[in-house]
Image 1: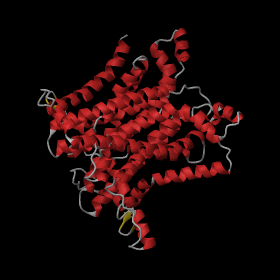
Image 2 (image 1 turned 45 degrees about the vertical axis):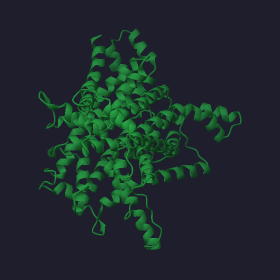
Image 3 (image 1 turned 90 degrees about the vertical axis):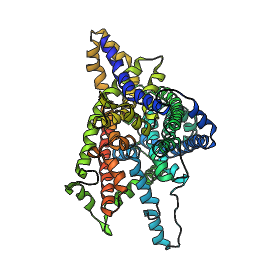
Image 4 (image 1 turned 180 degrees about the vertical axis):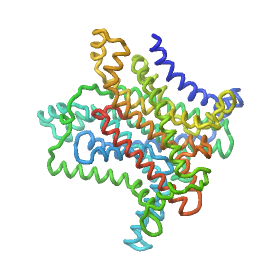
Length: 549
């Protein structure tokens, strides 16, 4: 009984102390030091500008979600039903955009599609300066493209994980009854995939709904989501009361979406049957199959082209290519704009990510067990633990500054505040990795062990742990990568001596000189390399795609 209570108390206490309390602190400060007043809500609900921001946030998220599904579904099919050389590396690359810092991806799009980007430079070379130009910066088009670029990995991982575990007998039975491929997909496969499709769509909608960096950097001043409005009201206009009201409106939306998501995700849990991968993967293909696969792979590489453009910029120097900017990261001992060397910036990111990974793994695993054991209310409990993903990183950062700004808990000058913030953002990904495996675990395995006299601890060590071990490795890798790329909260909380790679990249981009830009791009490329290695490891460790988001 004591162990069960500790299992519940641990993650609940972490969530209450480092999520609910800071959120309550900043909202209390926004409403006059704890005295609630409805005036800010009347300002928000009575002002056409703020109503317009709410409507714009909703419909741009809906369009972004539809586009993401269009991009992600063919790629999900590719990874779910086909085996080919390089699949592991290619699947790892699909996840890179999702965990890259906003400023890095923004620079990738600018390097690719900006006025002096690779596409416009190539067009000028082909047609001259008077030839066609791609002009998408500061438009809705680039916002939609960037959201699809960020979030299609969610569709790929959730849908492909479910799709790869569907028994091939369904399609074979339809074929025996005379159904063609298209009819089999629309009448058999698609209905079976619907829970995973809807759950991935809701999650994509949440991330597009709370989009901050994409809209702020690429959209320009004409476009502002709720997230951008909260940031501007807080940092530029100091209207904490209205910012708090908007934050509550955003929280209400995202909480409802996350509740729907967790219930859909529970419906798409896949029983673990330990069927060989060869039973569902297709290796023999006709010419048409090869052509379709080649088109999907080419399309995927096009989607990843902003990252390729980013690497090209990182190795460009003096009209040619060299590793000058990378060498500068390891030879600059004079310090920099951040009072620490670039090498120390890299070390800060690594050590903070390792500490965050340990905390996120412990909290996320315990929370997964709590969710599974609350069968009747698992959807509500799941949504509660997923809530940090639905709250603005800016809001959380300010909440930490307000809540932990005095003795005995003054964390403003400590590196611990960064680790806690990173852990809060990372542990939901551990839940999404471990929870599907726990839900799909055959109950008779634990029941048989218990009947043979095994204690709950022995059941966990000898039965459950071997099954969830790979999911734990996947969750740990996700947590490490998310911490390495966390930008929003870090920008508010970091001290100069604790500068991380994303913050250094953002600030270097704001400094004049080719050297600063080159080191920012080199840092971003190294971050990409570290994350790529991590997600290649995920594909090696993960059992038959079980456990994605």
